[in-house]
View: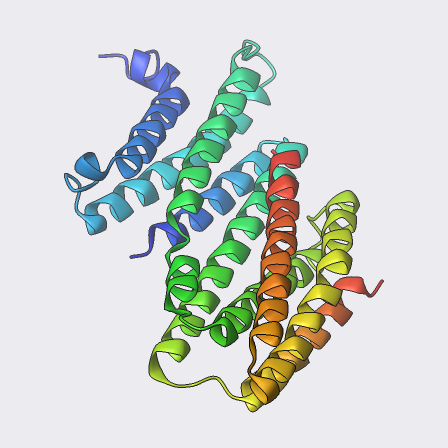
Length: 81
Length: 204
């Protein structure tokens, strides 16, 4: 069992309890914190996959092309209104 | 035995907070961490979370009873609970960067270093975009992440161009240029990391 997953579940459970108790501001902050922890976990998993790729083979131009396609798509999402 | 008026009942939320603090502390110390098996730790955290959820319901119910005494401690208990959760979460976050370290350690050549820093940037941009799409993320946080991205993007693009030059020519000059660009990109990617961390700090 991943302790980060438990932390995320715990944070969301407490956020829900605070919301039900009427403390919506604290609840929203905890939900945000849970989102940030979840995002950090995804980043670390992504970098683990990168390490594995480097271990197993040489990086090619196709890898770079695919990487920059991802970057462009995510930058578009980040900067769109 | 009057369970309703017992000390355990009156201080149940505080006790759960203490349990969370102890569990968080156990994870920060390498020697103590080994004392609690991972599955038991998982179970204890789940039970503490469930208990806090139930206490949240009970506190809410008690405070809405017309003849019930005003619970002056409710606010401070919630603050303590928040503090505990924040400390626990940051402890877990600080432990959870093994993938990042593995990727940078695995990069032996300048070409691979360039790839790792570009992948690191890509993962952060995805993280920032995902956070931006969550309704709970404040506007100021999104703005800070966008600014950090605008600073980093041109340098990461330059890393890609210089990598191509380096692989074509493979001389000392192109290698040095690529190394300098990678170093600059690492600093700007670190700014992007800080933007997310700062966002985290502002929100707590």
